[in-house]
Length: 343
Image (cartoon, rainbow, N blue to C red; front, side, top):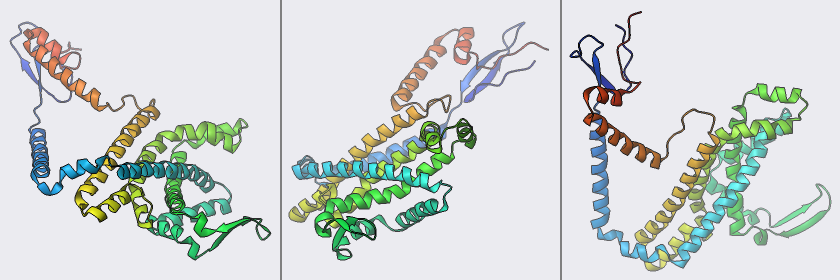
């Protein structure tokens, strides 16, 4: 007799009581005791942490609730989101341009892109923010005109480079260096044969990039871009060192006056967690959208996992209460091991 393999995660036991036919097989789920131990340990640590935060009066949760919806805190949150959006738009647009330049057959263009990425990735973003904020010490006046020719527009650097402008330039130009590498990796992930075939049909290099390469590269570009957006939201807190009143700076202004440092930091952290959670959900659904067709089975959402878990428990209960033959068929189905005829 030749037996099929049992479905993974089940243990098959034979019942030889069936006379004159193949043995009745019963699928028994494998017990994972280690998982229960790990889950119990996680729940224990979580309960201890929750109890510590609840009974420790130094957290001052009443003060946290008092300032959570304070006008200054909400204004700082709005400015944080504004910085995140503008800096990411600059980073993505400039990053695509730099990635295309890096892949250019012209060595001067490719070298210029490489130098940009090397410089902005090699220096800390905090240093770049301070540099843009104090740019007037290096260039008191900024001008725009014909190279080596007459000046068309000129103005004071102090008036042009405000703290908001310095924050946007520091965050956006730094992000462009990272986005350039992300986009370049996405472009290189597409098979070169497709670009060669499109160029053989008469498409220009820019048309091939726009209509063939980039739509396929989005599947590789989207996940790290989502991570960069979440990271940018938290990186905006660095602009507090140059005096721009975003979320963290708003909290610092309040606790420097009231000396309630921990509650104000907790209020700011709560808003950061809320914003990053919303971005995480958006990133997850974008990944599912651009991942369609790349894999046969996509990862289930949390709601789908809960539904499947409850459905699986109900199904096992129903199968266990059935009769012997029907119960074996209900539990195993096609995947259960059963005997086959001799060849």
